Image 1 (cartoon, rainbow, N blue to C red):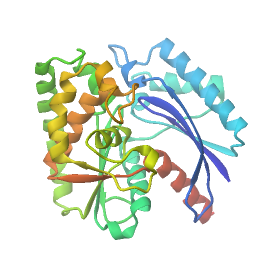
Image 2: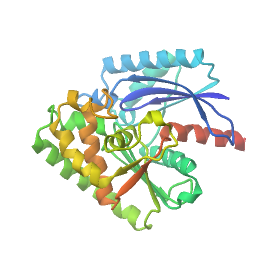
Image 3: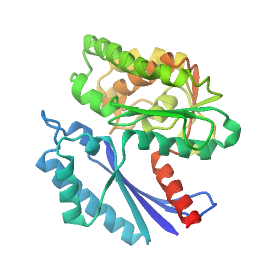
Length: 310
């Protein structure tokens, strides 16, 4: 069965087309992305403006056309923190549905964390033991921990790289005082939830799943994406700690020239590094594995599980 996952995220609208069957590994068939940066289009009241909604509708239309052209039998559409946290979320959802026929399922932060954890668990397998998962998106940070496919603890914090860049780091490069203030704020917020996880026990494996963490791992020496998804990749805390101030001192155009850094995300990599460093420090993580599967794969896996149970 050919499925399409339409992910309306804080940075991009991403249609992932996969050939999927219950009990089998989903095989990617096609990927279509459009950068909207919805997390950075919120106005002073926290609403997505009319232009942003129009751009979203046009992008969803384009994704549906691609899905049809690629023979997708079913599209699984969902939205994450940028739409979830918008003060006019209901209006956004109504307008998208009226214009495209697509009913976006708005995932809660906890659902994001649980589905991403499911993807990481399936990728690593049961031998990973107690798993701590960290995902830094454009609008939020998800953390989950557990021994099974359903995590024992899962939280979502408004610490996405795009959100923090737009709201807290206006300069290019950012003012060092703003970076220090952001660092204190991020660490304070993450510290409030650490106890919820550490009281359960220590993880056997720690995994990062986001584009931000993949880019930071590549920057600090991990293998290129061209070497394939089965090559082990890690992000070391010491290497990240040395790179964060270097990233903060560079303008966006120079960051975009660094190994593994995409032009579209270079502007928010400083905030992403600040969040990643804080999470690793506060959870006592010296190194994390990078997992190629994340939220979209979690949505697909959950759908396949339901098909198998029907």
